[in-house]
Length: 358
Image (cartoon, rainbow, N blue to C red; front, top):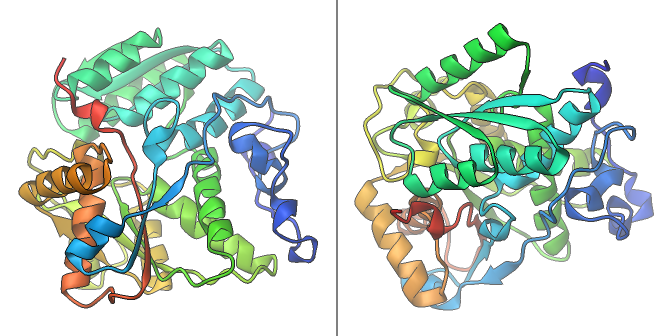
């Protein structure tokens, strides 16, 4: 069995070959970026057509909050309804390439659904651990992919501990979206798409909901690798967004600490970012600081308002976790961090269908 280090490495084509060298148009899903992925060529290409999500302008919503050039990247159009599909495709491909036949994952819902779907695609058994409080729609979605659903009473950290115990006891693969290095290699493709879309102009800000930080780290990784390969892609300011009742990165950032703060979380409508102890939080904080960005928190009522406004003004159907990014963009505009004429991208990370009561 090959090691993770052998299967997940870092490289990009040289800039001398131009932007087209980053992609292979004959492939589908994240594998369009196979020339740019640090994944061994002998692992299988597991795909459901994820990635290449559109970037759409938000003229009416932007005008309402004082932004001339606001854009949404519609990650909720992925096969399972969230950006997690990118990372899941990469993680499941690596685990299948290592010969595993069963995976375990812990999740508040979206990552579990993505891992369950891609495990099914690869012919692997999946056991997904979720909080008892996980949205009914997400639990139903996970079960619909044939995965075994294990509901755990307690915090998000209790769920992770239960999953880790199952991995240790049963010798199965831990398909952790917060720990497995291939996950960020998958989300890196989102950053490559954003960078390519704004190759001829300056992108000033990207505002990203952050729980464990997999999407923010992937976007940061894309820009760092593009710069190292010689591409003229300036790193935008990356702004992380958390729920006000569970904001270990906000507290740490405000204190100037390199490590996430210890917090006592409370329930929030933005359950996808309700992570009190993000295992890669120190990396997220470092990436934000390198970019010149910040971390802010959003109240539940602000998330609810943003979700309503994006639906009414632009026809976007966002889950509450996704809506906090848009609420934060409004706050950053009001406080002068983002100026009216600057270019802003907000990933629409998850579908509003995820929050439907079933």
